[in-house]
Image (cartoon, rainbow, N blue to C red; front, top):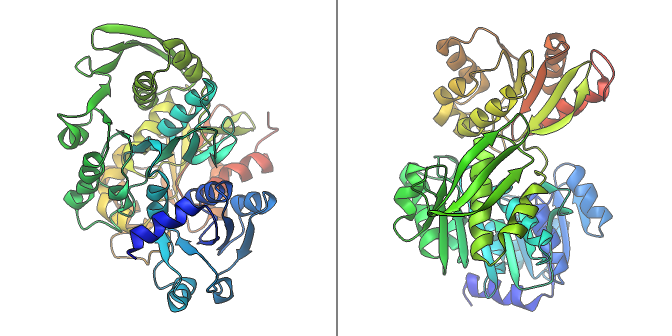
Length: 466
């Protein structure tokens, strides 16, 4: 039996024991919940204990800390490995020796939507927020789909859950090439910016994964018509959304404030209704337009869409306010690509803080090397920057891809207020030295840099929190 057929048979059965290697990450933790709710016995392991491993353990999923071949046995129905876990991992090799099939996370997710009504959200930026907007709006309307989003949503109740019907909304990750395995009814492409150089040979190879994804969509592709690469990949068969009135779904009368935004939703020349968001930034307006388009064409009334998006709350680490410290607002964001960072800085400047102090942890040596010169302009508007070592995400250092190399890009760009640090603790201390009442501290990166935001607020550098 071919691997794909074996996986499809396994998923349909809903029985057996599945072990997840690297279970503590966002994506793997969400998959563990979906598999458990489908009836599988789920266990997992990760190198380090984390909030997610503890949450999974409290929900009844057995999680071991550390990798060990004792976790693998011939009784397993399958093993799933995180993108960060290489094929050389001891447990992966042990599974092969035992004849237990090993799948990548994306392979399993793609298999889980077969035979079901599905909405898969892809794109280099915004897919977590967009999938969360769609899921929250559908849930608010009483449809209760299965959902899988790449971040923690307090409104939804977590990263993933099984609903009551046949519809599933999920975030389709492009990082490891498994995007081309999805065959959803409805797909969304939020935009395409070259990324994940650790997996793709070049930009065209990266773009090709989106080409295959859209061609395999069974019903309809929605894409951001304001994005030139998405336009090239998805037209002429897709339905566009965006800020330009040339898009099928578009926004008019856009009003942006520090923490909110609103717009009139149009489909062609027809005014559909008024949309109010509790988040700011044009990137979030684009995310909301995608959610509007999908939900409207799924049959939701404009009243249901408007109410759902008005109640939308972003997932954690998407311009998340952590607290205050001595009159300093502390925000944390998952951004790790220059385009994402630019949007975050724009949101920060809208809050009219006295100064914006940023702490940035680059993510992966391959990305830092490939996009090094693009990072400094992304931080325009920041008054002082504290730079951390690259978060390796299982990569080995490469020449040109270290934080020292990135620091030189900032100096060459003309940045004068950039400080290179050697650790999270040193960065925390440097942040404490620089922040003053009226400032905004922005903690940016996809690694463990979010700890600094918690430390600053918990330590109360400079005064009491609120």
